[in-house]
Length: 307
Image (cartoon, rainbow, N blue to C red; front, side):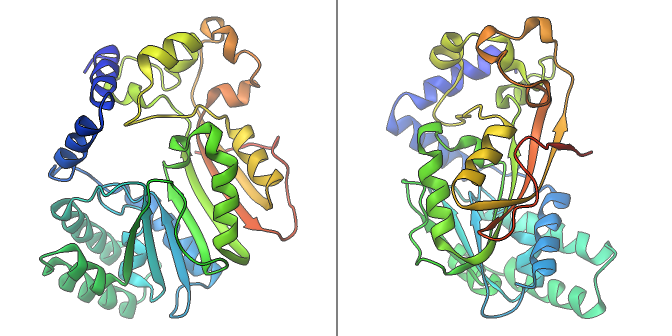
């Protein structure tokens, strides 16, 4: 699809609450959503490294999408309780069960899993695939699903051991970002950890392979705000450095950060973005490791390039 056609369609669907509900209703019935298995495995690796994979621990997934993509690997392997949170109900049971089967198959063929791990994953996947409803599936996987349009998880303070998100933080409204960070820190236990993969690319470019992953840099603020951005796939265009600094200034210590990059035609970058450092202009994905109030290990200006 053409970049501008996609933008026009999404803005049209964003125009009224009834249209937005229709978009979500259709999405809940799609059958083509896919889990990024390396990403969901990364979450599981962090959960086990942190030692919060047993009963009595609680994990919080911010932004589940249609298939609970960040949680499936962990849900098949660990005994911790998982809270799956989103701002609206957007769940496809068919796709979720399909992806559970894919993740379970990946676990069987992956290194680093014991025979008992593989047996547990296989048994849980089989039980989940027999589920006829989401409540039945959640009973098998020890997941609690919560929705709140405010974007703030309605859960008790200091009740979560680890928070994680994939391709979610770029959708948090710029004006609400500080309040969201404060809410996330409030529900974390002391020294609890926050992990995030943040998409810094232009999401409209996903519809048009001819466009740059940072295509929005080539548009004026006026054009982006009034013709291209939309409520359904809103992106806040915060830079990697801004996100890291916001976490750091609001009670989190940064353990590590990494960015993926793409090439950018600097001559085409619009004046409203030229204040950004080149590393931020080129950043397409931020990998953030933060902890609630421990020992600071790096500052926001140190953006390590990752593959």
